Length: 343
Ligand code: ZN
Image 1 (cartoon, rainbow, N blue to C red):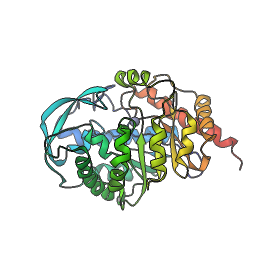
Image 2: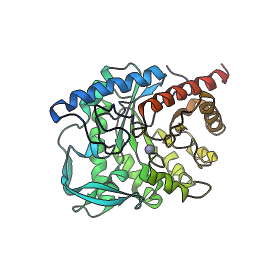
Image 3: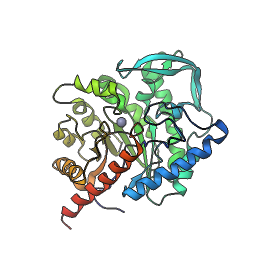
């Protein structure tokens, strides 16, 4: 469908228990290597079907083929040693993660996600979005013994993201989204080089471009961090004016159950706003009325033609039945508000 208030999701969905351990980040695969790709493809069909059944307008593959939204892409690049794993503090030391190490020049030998995009594109008639990690967030989720400079490393990744993004867009994507949760952490770097790196990563990409900037998955480290951010979360106040001037068309952000002052959304004048109307840090399924109330609150600052009701973040760590409920509530809530719009 087209028209105002088209619904979409940030990106990830839970994987079936036969594919990966449920409800955890970096969950180990449950299938032997020789059966993994087939299992991942089957899981994509389920992810697409779940979104279609719920009534989501712009769907994703649920990131069913990636163990993690950053490292799934990195696995197939040259210059990264996955056997050289070190534990580092990421997102300004908010939590520890075991990460691979950059040991040489970053290069892409071949398209990484082309088969996944072809498969998803062949199995849904809906608009299709695909997500890739953004340069700053990759830099923040890897150890580096080669470039030894975050900006230089970010632009090396921007180059390979750009090669990948162009290839994937050409396979029939409607939206290519870069995930940059690090944008809410390193505000000075966003201004110094983060936007430029996004531009390098999306130059010449033949579909709508988006960036997702959130306060993280609903895991304990993130929930604890949010408690330290005060009564108003104003990180977006610095990044949105920069994004408003950027060439990125859509901005996906967190606002359901958050302390983001919604007036900040006015700083995204001219952009499509993918506003989180679903809280991914709670296992309580929203009612359509609650979703509608979230959408109406955002609509005080963003016109419905530019507003895409979305989830706050990825839902990979949530139980599947909860997620199905949340998807249905998202679509039903948007439908309620759509009926109130002048014809
Ligand atoms: Zn997110």
